[in-house]
Length: 216
Image (cartoon, rainbow, N blue to C red; front, side, top):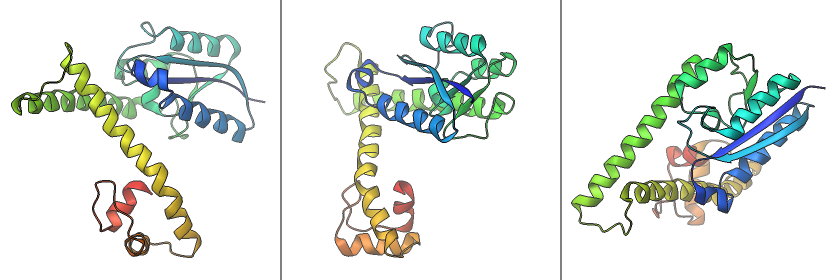
């Protein structure tokens, strides 16, 4: 039986307190191990930035150490939960630790190079979007109500992201119900949602195939 060490991470203390993201990650990695017929040796969770390396993230360092000690495979829900630091991800190629990402099960420490660079670019884009949102807020004269406006905007971005997740969790069961009736195309699903008068996430009354694709 193959042994696994699980690792889950969220970026903010608020997410850590509320369980936003952490609970779903834990459920994802456990189901992955169960489906693989493996056993979980240890589980590690922490609240920390994905831009830091294992030297700055104690729980990740412990997880990697445990993997080396017992010959286990590290399993994460998504690659960016492991790290958004390309240098660190690339170092895994020579780190003697096998790992698997539930969202990209075919990626391993030998093929992580390209995705490592993609993950870091995403981290950079998030930073750019946060700074851009802050500038726009200042231009509108918005008082952010905190001594740390960058942190406030980050929370706003996180809230918008969570709103998308919440909407998807509500609408997805309806889409599955429609599919069970035999409707399989995006256009067909959109037509059914329109006939039911279900509004989109932004409150619009018309669904399009692309709108369905975003949540299906």
